[in-house]
Image (tube, rainbow, N blue to C red; front, side, top):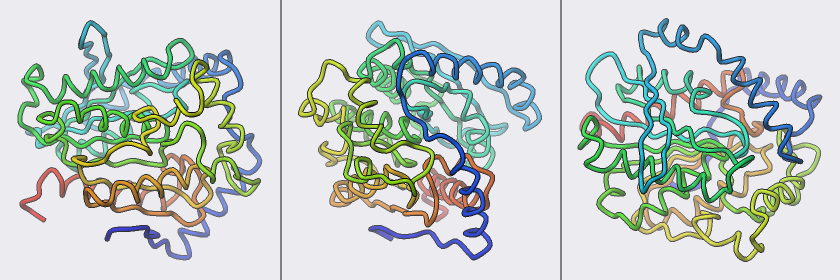
Length: 324
């Protein structure tokens, strides 16, 4: 199943997505205009996460916060383990436009993977770009990956690792994989990557620059200015350099990948173009979801559930290839 495919949505699923899109159309499209608003949103996010431990307990799991150090840099990780033996590990990079979010915001997705795939999830609480250059976020994520994949992490030694990232987290996941080429023995332990609607060109792909009113959630043209604001000391030529813009990297040696993006996402070209560049070197399955906007896996639709279930099945196949 190489190449661009559209995951089949039945009439009910498609109608449900379109109804939800009508609600989204009333909302302002997300755009990074300053460094104050993200701080407010982040505070509200943390307020809403109070009681998160109780939610995990209802699923029979708990989260551990661990701080690791790589090359003198401290990185916080949120680890959730299955009730039984750990069969593999998912290294998770949350979204949030590099300026909001934390590892806890992916608890619901991660618990589902833990229980369905018998994996542990290690979610990276990387620093945010309101106070740290994007390169610093990339350093945090690479440090977390190097720790997990090295002998320093005895608990998960020898286990297969799957990298998962969404939106800005998709960018950080892809950038991390490219940076890991400097440590080929570590990269070989990564058996797959699941990336949802990532940002892979920090100068803006054509679909970002030309995004019209029919696209939802993200302000496509406004992203170009936002990306420049996040990398103020770089020219566009410098922004295109990998791994800062993973789209232009060398994918030789990277693992198989499962990619998703919605038709109404300004970032559609990012996913479709990186898939084409990745395919000569590994099996790449890319799904263009009809009528779906950016962030669709968070929305209460059957389409989101179908995509997430497919992702968990794919992860299980990569972790347990002998049963496929």
